[in-house]
Amino acid sequence: MDVHATDREVDITSAQVVADSIRTLRPDAVVHLAAQSSVAASWKDPLSAYRLNYLGSLNLLRALEAQAPEARVLLIGSSDCYGSDADHTGRPISEADPLRPESPYARTKAAAEQLGALAAERGLSVVRVRAFTHIGAGQTDAFVASSFARQVAEIAAGLREPRMRVGNLDSVRDFLDVRDVIEAYVRLLDPAVPVGTYNVASGKGVPIRALLDQLFDLAGVDADIEVDPERYRPTDYRIGDSTKLREASGWAPRIELRETLSGILESWRHQVAPADA
Image (tube, rainbow, N blue to C red; front, side, top):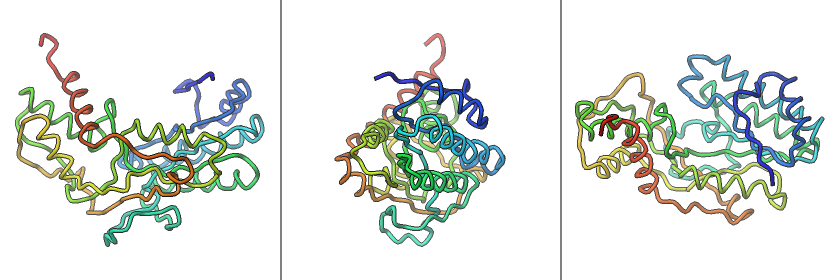
């Protein structure tokens, strides 16, 4: 099996560039990850979110229908499309629950998913994935776990005062190791798994505060907490039900959260370490 990865050399917003790329590669399968993936950034530049997330998906799906109609396609969406469970029902969200996207990011992802559903009705093998929060070493510190880990690593190294800048620590998320998420994607590429929509989730809710506490424990540090208004969002809860995926593919997450956080922290320790250390 040959794997071809594209980055900035393929402008997903250009229908012609995407069509040329698909015509050249003639892929048997495509995992569509190109996106503007930050909720915060989407509020600052909603047009960019629209161009990358919606028009990019449209360009790809049209090119595949024309040039590689037998290809299997994973259209990677987001649990953000479900919106906030502000009332905290305590029930994991299933694929049957309605979409209530709130941010430009979530709205463009939900719209792209609808494009995928229409393409599937026309015969393209499109699997729509609603991935819950996944984290891992190397993730930018624009996201919560990596932001916390960087700050904790800098405190442990004496590079900053022991004060953490955080958002809302009371919100609850469903965290997955990115390696488990990749395993789910690989299984969804199997043509034996029916076309449809699938949550990729652990089914376990973790308060953001518990994430920070584990990082403190792993690093052996403590710090004052300072709420940053720029990072603060209203308290919400988002936990996923992945029963459909598990039954269709046999997938289940394997990596414990503490192991994941340890890897993220160790990655930041290496990055922030003084050059002469």
